[in-house]
Length: 55
Image 1 (spheres, rainbow, N blue to C red):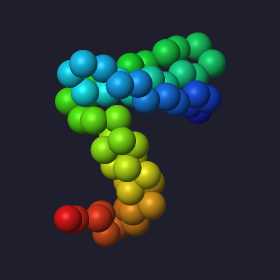
Image 2: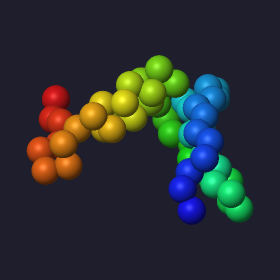
Image 3: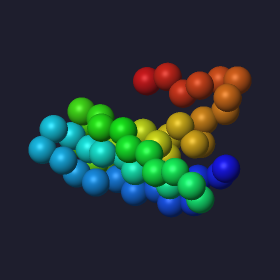
Image 4: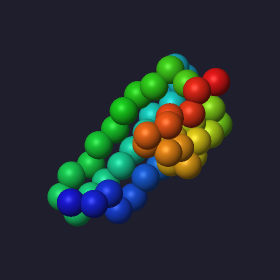
């Protein structure tokens, strides 16, 4: 099923990425600041799959 909802929440240890589809909810704790995680996701979405962004 396609993901219907995505949210990023700040936690004491970094960030938590939430996602939901019709039947399931997912979460992933990451040791990255909320703003950095958001920027990383946007950059990944814009990257060409054949030529990943490298910094």
